Image (cartoon, rainbow, N blue to C red; front, top):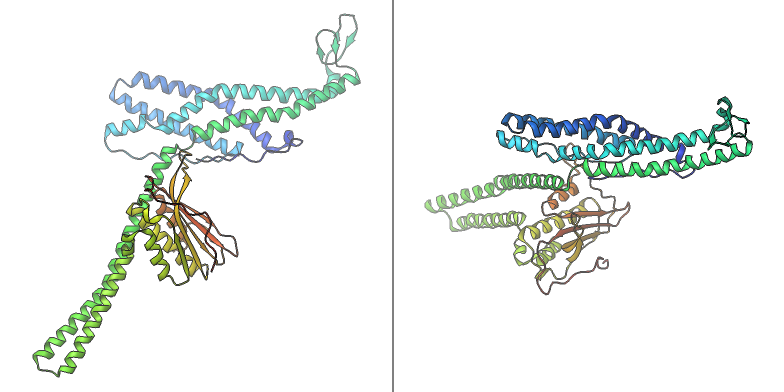
Length: 466
């Protein structure tokens, strides 16, 4: 859930700024809707209390409560349109199977109850905000224009018997002289400039309530992230299995068939008493084909899980650096003693492999630095600090890397896909890539436990360039 209030207008232009008048229009709409919203709130609460004693009543009460989602959507659009705030859509309702589960989901819908709370709380706020704002605006307008319309006011007699025409304060003080007209005009100008400031306080409270109660909850966002990460994991696993099947079918299987044919040919030659030299040549070819097949199988296994990971992430990163197409320097201080789960180590390895590959293919880099270590990192959910695996990949390429949605052909989704995969372990991806380079991509994966004794942290910066 995010909110963003637009930049405030300057003080001198505030009474005439369109944002000030849009906010005043929001107060008008809120006042007009408040009685109907409160009526629906009271009806919903009373109806639920009255009919929940029956099974059918529970279902109907749940349906009435879900109507709050519609009210919440309307108020959310109002806040976005008039108050210049950004509020994410609440998570949609998930279908439930079974009568009781469906009824429980309806009556326990957090989005509906939060909208009900918003409508109840904003009823008095709408009245007070509109009255105060309108009084400031009306008095300011009347005071600044009093000199023009006061001549049409009826005559009033003071206690001394004299007649006056103009606004009166008390029984004998009338605004009917140039000096007093000027004083009232000045007071009106002051009130006119105070009006946007007073109104802004009420509008800020409306915006706070809207962003807090009409958007998704942190729990629902977390569930959505977990579901998206799970879907990405399933898709990744399926794509990897398909790639393995294709490689086995097109490569390894074809080589094994060739080896079988060569061995069959050697057997026939042996049965027919062929020349030993020819027989040796066929067996040599079969032997070479077998070694090539074994090499392909090792490469295929390395793509599933690199054997170097068995020796730790630090060794795996050094092995990856040695196999890269461009010079890569890996620095992983303290990772050898870190308590990293196999999933974290594997995801980190393939993330670095993806980033190094991107630097080679897309950024046209001539060198890459990889710095990994355990560092304290802030938890976005709680704000607390806990240990995290931090990996920085620095290349000297042309820069311009951005995280964007994949195109229709599925291309251009490398960083976005990497970000989704990292979300499966609560990881974050940060990209700093100005045009012309260099590019620094930081992978942050929080650790569920604490590092074992002896684990050290690395510095924030990458080591010097080659």
